[in-house]
Length: 443
Ligand code: EPZ
Image (cartoon, rainbow, N blue to C red; front, top):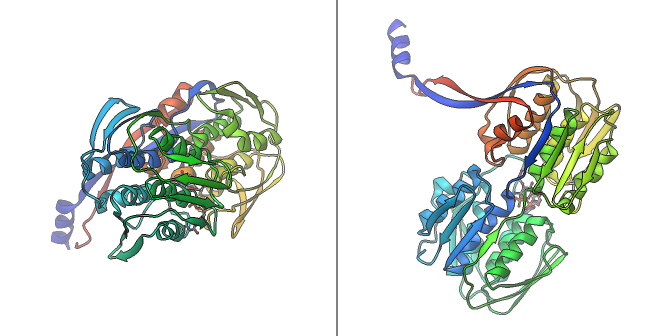
């Protein structure tokens, strides 16, 4: 036994993880600037492949999903030059590879956008079946429906999905469900197809419009983005351009919640207030004061929070990515709130963590009933996905005392400089290293 214990000690690996330590209970006060939109960036970066030229992309958020997208471009043969931490020059003229390396595509669900872009330019693309946040089943049948309508074929083998077909020919696609990813992927594959493509029952999120604007800057002919139907006239070739990504609607919404839940007063700068309307409307009903400026919103809370009924829907409905953040806010409302998740099957997994903080929430399928409590208690917490993790940060900021949040890699996939931005608002939050000893399976 002693020998076995000695062996275990000798072979134990020490791995380094990071966590957030948050000493909550202080109102956030000051100004914060919002970064570029993650969900636009992860589509626009693959879209540069379609130009076979140099593009300069500005206002890219400095987050790990963008880093992975850049690594994929580089692995495919693109030349990448960093201009500053938020701007990159990407030259895709020498790309020849059409297969995204397995280990990179598994790190990020949005790697599926490389399928559409590679198919559009080369007539073939291959990626691992995508990873990303675990929110329930995440099929890509609607992406494949669009590719196949344009004349491609798909096959799945050993965890990899391949689409190929040349020439692609424009087609009429009516999506069975409103999907952000399928809408974007269909656009990527159709801009270089022969003839006209009409996409109906499409998603209308701000990042759909941003991708269309970028494609049009590269010489594509995409019309109707932001409405239910998008018309694309295929071009023979596209060219490089310089493009600045829109501000992140969900990052902005997250700071709106941070200000409101702590009873603070925060000016949130570099936003498009129109994109925030579905969030602003609900927060005002909850008793939060919101002042809109041209490219900023001020969020102030002085009185009690009021309960709400919310159902998440495709844009312009209330965004599912704000659902965990809004749930946290409503844990402190005076009365009973009901949140219905209308997009994902399994997006309430974080609720157990909030209950451990003293929240009173009952979940039945896709409905959460929240009885407001006077305060949240600090606790050790674990981030289960990106937005759930951000929501726990907000809960910890509101709780009097010290909370620790593990598995923050999920959060850092989507929030640039979260710690620094919150510290700038007066929050007591630190990122600290945590060392964990792991025994090899064999012992
Ligand atoms: C995008 O995911 C976002 N991710 C998600 O944000 C966001 O929650 C989601 O849109 C909805 O707004 C990125 O943009 C990278 P969908 P996506 O296709 O494109 C069903 C975050 O926190 N569906 O619009 O994968 C699907 O199951 C992330 O930033 C099909 O049935 O979402 C879901 O119920 C998490 N077949 C619904 O449609 C398909 O082929 C909406 O999914 C595709 C989707």
